[in-house]
Length: 106
Image (cartoon, rainbow, N blue to C red; front, side, top):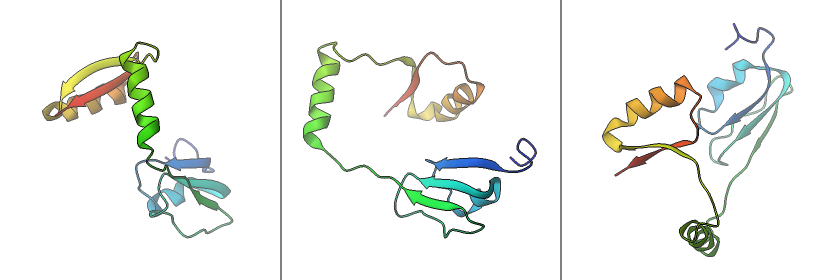
């Protein structure tokens, strides 16, 4: 990472929940945001640390699913693969330029 951004990056959103090891990629005074309140590193070098989180909402999920079923909400799916092909899904995602998301089925 530091080879690509020798001074460090301005901010990191940690959706992979890696936490502490990512701090070395941040510049002094940068911002770190975790996708969960349970994996937040201790601030250092003036780095601002915070977390975001969602609250389960069954009524909102039901509304979204109803909108999908009725065709009022469109999603872009680039492909559907069985869970056994998760490694292939990762290869495709890393290659980029997908016209949507990859869905893994169980």
